Length: 460
Image (cartoon, rainbow, N blue to C red; front, side):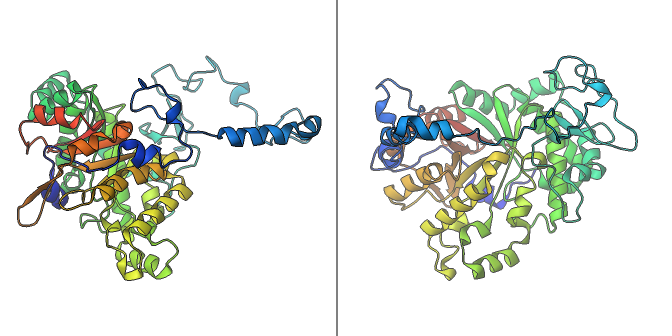
């Protein structure tokens, strides 16, 4: 597994983080007019938040509207049209269940002709069938969880599910789940000990690794890398695996089809080696920050052809990725040529994310690597709170150490101010490399847990 330039520049050490002058409520809750956290008791846990769906004033207005004139509007109202069809109504046409109806428990996810845990009998001709909530190809291999949006399409018009047959399916099948002995051995490695130390502090653990170069090196190298990660991820305290960084941004891949094949192969192999774990990737979508500036969108599309929104979206959900992390590096100064400052770029990205509803397809995280050095307390607080408040991300990942090209290291230092962001703790994650500890991994992770709810452990 490669040590990417990004990891060399910012391979994590002990966290020292965000300076915020105001407490978390000022950075997040008090600025939110719909916050009702003031109604919670003083002993309410910091991670519990309260937001009005309708403020008391709005609720009164709604009640008065429907209650006016002896509830006249309420009496005239009709049910909102839904997606259900009354099959008994004249003119309705409803497909009949196969074979006159499904057999077995109506709540079972398995087809009627499959025993629990087994494989159903698929129709001939290579037609796809379902296995336990996953769509399977003609060879019966699970391809990924279903969503209601249909399988994304590749540039050739071929569905992502079909594209997983060929090389991706073969590579996924080449990986076998780790044995008990391999899992036990992984627990004794530095990475395994870091996982145990992180979990002991109450941190939610993700493994942060890179499989792109292993995949390009061939099936043997790829299978070995996945097995190493799978043995470490098999531990119950590991919530997920981020298997690629700078996906489509660096020079590892030159074609969208190649990226698609890698994501499909990696997700299939990891779901086999570490079943039940969430899978994520890190990348950036430059066009999002352009807003309505057409010249900006044209230039970013030309400069970053693998990072077009529709291509990144194809990896989400049925594409194999459960979590998408978007880097904030380009937002700081990357758009000045078009008169777009960092604040506007961040706002534009938030609008695009909400409009495309990517949070329905996958969990979206924002990643900050620039919260070091001479950064104002207000700027730091804004970078953490704003993506969450704007609905652009469900969590924010913060690098705990940055190394420049000359080998110098900058650290985040405002611990006391960061502690005031306690209401956001579960939504904040530290990116930390146990191979370069500040003190020792156990002590570093204990300090990280004072302000973060999650940690991404860099693994080789």
